[in-house]
Length: 216
Image (cartoon, rainbow, N blue to C red; front, side, top):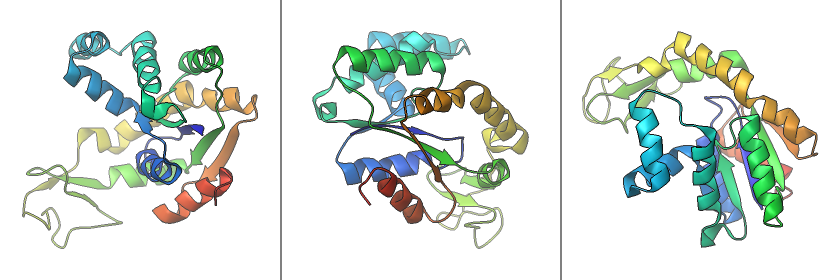
């Protein structure tokens, strides 16, 4: 299966992508992983991306598209893949359409993870990260530490990242609505979109997604 996963920040795309890819035995291809792999390997595309990032500029679509195409051509993606974070705008969606068409392939589904905006803000703005080990993550409401401001695991100080502050989250949501949300209509015109509530336990959301793919 060839699947695109769409949803606003805080919808749990990364978590769901990992579970779905494992259940479907296809690779999970995320934009973040593409950038990290290309930069760490020093590929020409990775070097270009790093130049823009160091200058504080957005990486052009053609660089991101090139990375995604290269990854989709790897052997493990021959029978399918799950795209997470790509495409992120209409230009990238059209480039993906063209790439698949040229290779005699097609998307099987686009899963749209739906979360109310206030819930997104609550999920992200409540995160608290350990300064000593960023893998230790808590949430002010959903998984609070035993002692406020102190990591249960190592005793380090917990803090809120600038990216997780409410005003920043709302700006990220505005970008999502203006740039990424239009691809949902693009794919609806192709009859590919299924909207799934991303509220509830992780396993419940995964079950909804699998049923939408006819695998539940």
